[in-house]
Image 1 (spheres, rainbow, N blue to C red):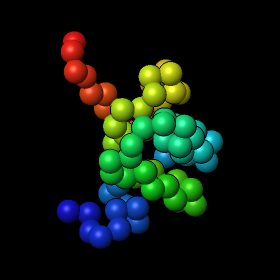
Image 2: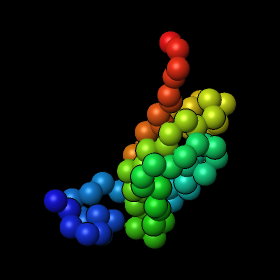
Image 3: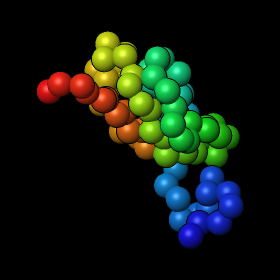
Image 4: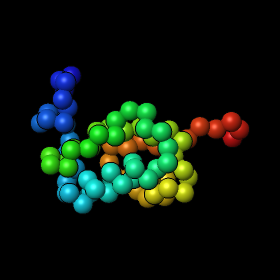
Length: 80
């Protein structure tokens, strides 16, 4: 739908500031989970690829802060 390079598409949302781009990169890198898809960041154009993180550490910043970006942490459970 957006072509082979969504980061260059004018139809894909971008991150507002360099600071927020760096913050989202830090959330991904410090999650201690498995990045199932996404995770690519192009700071020059303020683009963060939609990212799914499986089983991040519940004490990591991605689980304790508001994300405000295209990052979805997923926790798996054996018993609820």
